Image (cartoon, rainbow, N blue to C red; front, side):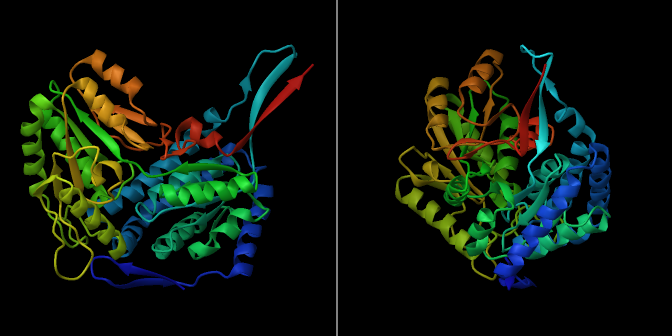
Length: 453
């Protein structure tokens, strides 16, 4: 039995019967059988199904959003928009998949030579708890529009969200088993990866778990795409629009109670504006309301699990012990639920825990840089390389940072976000491969070379 705990109360939220090993094999084989028919459908037919799924998500938005709030604590004002974003993803690929997958003509000694992007079969997608609908849709939709079927192994802490997502696909009236929910405990994931019918694996989650998934898939000679953790730098140079930068840094850090891989985690500030900008951050963070995620005026809900909250507090405490200044928060609250206050740690250096480890919660880290060159050095001083942001009024400096920041995506004077139109992914310990955009849909295709005399 997979049991979710409401992190706002610490009480049981939902239970879903988990599959045993025969059930696991049966589910994967059903998806593989469906792939034989689904691959032969036209892109227009697939688009019709995905548009219907988008309509179902919008129709069921309130119910699905409530499940997210119950199972992982997402505030209601964020839950509905997440479902909407999942619907947008379906509609985007329904409209653009034909363009993304069109044959690529390449001149050679043939009369005609080209690359044809063809489906692989059944794809295993392993998803995390922090964005149960959006992260799932950005993996499922491109794979389906490419002509694959999907076996969805969602996080066992959000089992009801997974059931609801599969139901939305079923209610849309598409072919059976193009999306199959696989409610299994984590210890059975290896069997799913190794099943002969699984052709490739997509994984979103921690770097530690991603390394295990990648190694297991590689041992079976299966392609994998990994979107892993991040410790994203948010660089603020002295000439930046400080008001806009402070607003964006605050928003980026506290979305989903800070439980986002692409959140701004290390705020690196050029020395001439360091004190001023830290004060601006403190003022904004202090205004945010932490509380009941079912209330529309709540800004931050709870941390998703007690063990995650304990790990976050350990990072905060260790960083303070190492010499950081705690300007806000940093104390475990009393009472039910797994809440954690907005916390601002200043004067953080590369020798400290919160600079080097990913902090998955509403903990902002302020780092002083002597100049622009030092800011770039500090930004790249990380084992992670997911997203990064640079704030400056100088176009030349902005482009220099955009080119030199070691990350899969860089935002200039804006927030790092995932968008169906643009590829998303990381380097270093943040993973490999890309989701979304034209690059994402091609990850799970056979780029077949065809040569004609």
